[in-house]
Image 1 (cartoon, rainbow, N blue to C red):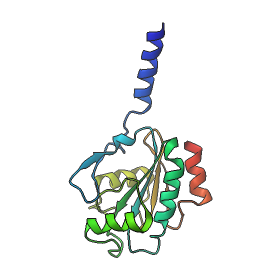
Image 2 (tube, rainbow, N blue to C red):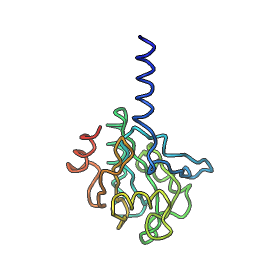
Image 3 (cartoon, rainbow, N blue to C red):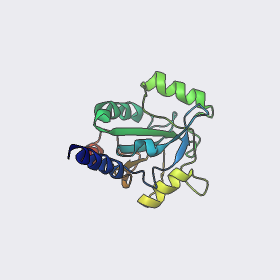
Image 4 (spheres, helix red, strand yellow):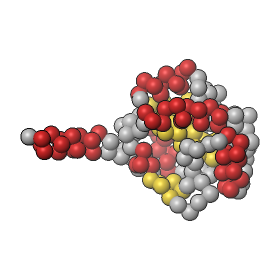
Length: 175
């Protein structure tokens, strides 16, 4: 009977965290040739943010790092995706982006390659986020919250800060 119970738990665990179509996306790691499939985050609550190093919202990096640190042990992940889509407010060299994030804000959540996040040339991952939410990023630091099931819960505009009551309540409700 014990083996049947273990088998049942194993099957439940696999099916509970199967990779969704949205997370089944491959991104290149920032300033690297390595690629990562986001299925690695299946079962986590994920906040996806299009970031930029030279924007009025750039100080949000500090708050993103704080909420990541606070909730990561509960299955929360922040994913940063630099973009030059909004007035080119990101460095063109990925090494500079990586250095800036590390030295200025101590970022240690996953950062991926600079990508287009809007329009017909948007990265396929962003096309999925846009289709699922009905919202395209209108500026840097727009946020998409993805639930443990891999589905988009909501989209938050740039002015919604990472530590705002609205966003933190949404995150903690699904953790």
